[in-house]
Image 1 (tube, helix red, strand yellow):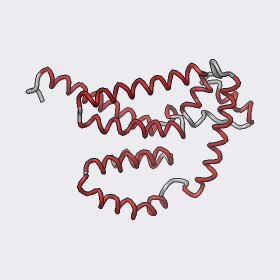
Image 2 (cartoon, rainbow, N blue to C red):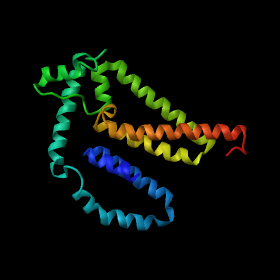
Image 3 (cartoon, helix red, strand yellow):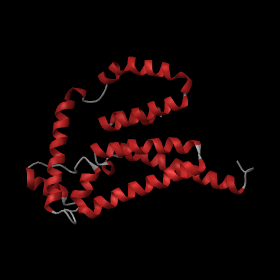
Image 4 (cartoon, rainbow, N blue to C red):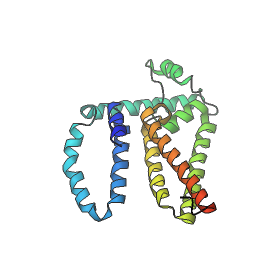
Length: 201
């Protein structure tokens, strides 16, 4: 976790670092339930120090304004081709033609899919999120696997990152997602093996 945290910090991605911090905090509160008061005090006392070392914290308001402008322009691109979009590789070229500035992606996963692939891509993504969430919730209620709780906790945080950036272009987030999915896949394999042969593990 230390190496992963250091790697994410070195990318200078504010959103990626914030998500990693939230994951660590939520997991700590789950693991150390009896010491939540101490954890809260430690978190409050260390928040000022954490903000001092937060990447580019002095330019937060300017970055937010830039991001809002990109979202507005990306939605304008979507309105130019609402059904099929401007394609993934055509986004930057069409954005430059519209604004005179180069932006590689929309910094929002839903807006990027809408602008690139139109309504079909946006609706397909939402359907995938809703369907996956439904199956995970159903699995949680049926099996009550302890580790599934932690896996489900991460999904809203990853989706929240998608609201401020295009997840598929951020290596630091993809690494975390791949680790989570790989671990969940391993958990599923162990569960199936235990069901077949409880003495194996």
